[in-house]
Length: 216
Image 1: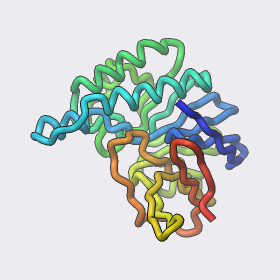
Image 2 (image 1 turned 90 degrees about the vertical axis):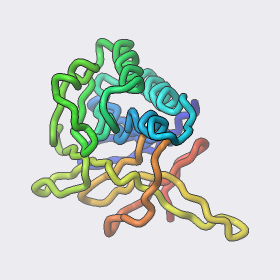
Image 3 (image 1 turned 45 degrees about the vertical axis):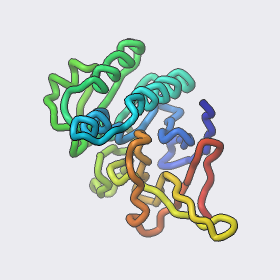
């Protein structure tokens, strides 16, 4: 897996955006991501829509590689870890969690994370919050204003459409950053991209398998 970094300094925090849909907070040794949606593919298959069975496994393998690459002490999932109830994909997450007993896993609840805190603890989540603040950075699943704090969020699965050569249009996942917030891309590859909701004054950092770049 090719991990490409784009450094960013926000609110006295040294952040590394990656082309793998997660960022790393250097001072806190914390990997931050959002919208894993474990169980979404299984939910579609249960309802008769044929999908590859390895989608969640590939996402979790990518997460495992990022954790080891950055030697993260903490992993913050900014909502929508679980798409729909307990299922095989959630068990795969528990298996990954057991491979990292010395690390702390934190969940900021998203609109899909409807299971009990006890169940979340059972699958390997150490701490569960509705909102959470570390130093000058706050975390909430849905983009919002938290009393003037800088907020890292997810939820909207941001993307951007760019015009390339020969009038060819391509869609890219992206990070959106302005003076008040940073919106994370969806970590799951099995999600759509919302290219319509760009907060005013936001810089867009788009990425693909071979790179990450600030959109002019």
